[in-house]
Image (cartoon, rainbow over all chains, first blue to last red):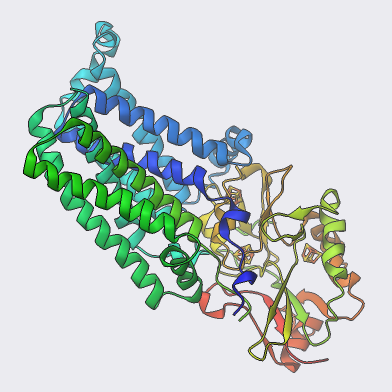
Length: 301
Length: 200
Ligand code: SF4
Ligand code: SF4
Ligand code: SF4
């Protein structure tokens, strides 16, 4: 088999860094919304909304016919041509709902806006467990969607595994915990949440490590030839540096080591900054390396 | 015409490529671009590193180290992942058994590109559309009861196109008579691009 005959997906479908950044922001906003159910703080609410908006800007910039969106939606409504089988369609639906709910939560968290009587309903909703449960559910749905988006892209066998949504949920949770640690450093959240986040983050790091290794191992051993080639690129090929240094070294071992040290000697803010930034970068590297490693099934063997 | 839900296609149009007859001259590849996307003549599809055509030439080696060549294109799958994944239903089956695109409903998300196991789509740099066989000019030829450009251009009679539902069509007869295969049969896409393996 001549590997040079394969076409890397990124070259034709252009699913590389732009989509990785989109998936990263959606993950932060998604699992951030789940965290918001427990930690109802304004900085988290604003981060969720900003992440969603920036993520959506990235994905819209990737559309080669973004200017056709209004026309498409007009005709799709007129002719009821929506494709309910498509995760991309569900993504549009889930992200739209998530965006609206995020905006409500932000309005409720900005005291200036709460002076306007016609916006006070937002504060009422923000106190409702049912509403915040729905918000958390939309966030979880956004994160899961961003995984199934790849799982159902049948052309790239490396992605065709239900492990990707699992990996995305775990790693997005890591990113959310890293954000909460950063908020602690900035004085935006309290000691109790930071201490809980530290322990939770370490557990999630271990789960993420296992999930990444399982993903590579399964693809290498029982995947089709296209999946094996993609996993080999991650494991020992041209993308191995990004996997071992970016995803595992920076993204998992640095936060784990700093977490362990913090448990021994207490939390040091400079170290927490390093560990949070490393964890956030690792989550982005993970999405990028999985996207970049995808190749099509070889047609000629 | 767009196939409605629950409707059966009236025809099952399919492509046949006879690899034994093919001399690898590339006339079909050029005819395809010249007919369907003349503005792309002399321009490469970056990912494939070859002429932006709806037919892609894949060169490789067999187990004995001898060079091999295969022509690849849209298989007009009867269970097409590109149809399943397009969010607003731009990609659809036609009553002729082809897979076509409704440009009005396409936002250029390239999900159909990543969903095609055969890697046959390419994003047009100007229209942003995910191009593939059949191009609109070939569809017009077929509507006028002519053969598509690649079939007309082939000097070795290595290409054919016709209705699998019609037992007397040349494609049906060839496929009955000569050994043939489809690509990635186990992918479950029910492809309709047949590679004939011996000389006719
Ligand atoms: S039928 Fe037309 S579009 Fe399809 S490969 Fe032949 S020339 Fe190209
Ligand atoms: S070959 Fe690819 S583009 Fe053509 S119908 Fe099948 S999945 Fe769709
Ligand atoms: S690029 Fe166009 S045709 Fe392809 S999936 Fe996206 S909207 Fe559908």
